[in-house]
Image (cartoon, rainbow, N blue to C red; front, side, top):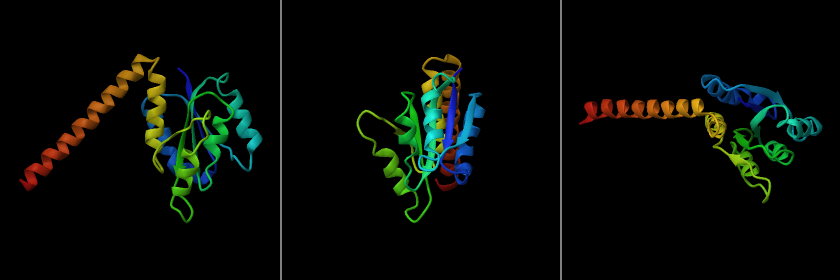
Length: 163
């Protein structure tokens, strides 16, 4: 199975990134986590990106706040799918990171999830890998069914309480 690269621009992003790690763990998907900055360690970020495919990665998650150029810097140097997580930080509460991550030029796509949306970033990576891995596809189906049942149970409880 291909592994997922998780890059964060700063160790302060770890509380968000851990949600992606926990999601990947729950599906048994291998991963590596690194701290590389698009601005402070551009050579290391580029080296990781350029070599990611040959190093066994199937997709990359890039989490960054504020200027949030990390996902774009990673995507500029690989043709693997890159999923950006805009991280809430600074005076604009993550809107700056969201706009920086989502506004990529034609030819360098970055899939972007919600501000602090690490679980969805991991699930999107799992869906990408599941295209070729039927056991992962089955786990995704099971999760969707469990999530649906959980909502229906909450609905039942509310109906019983209020109707």
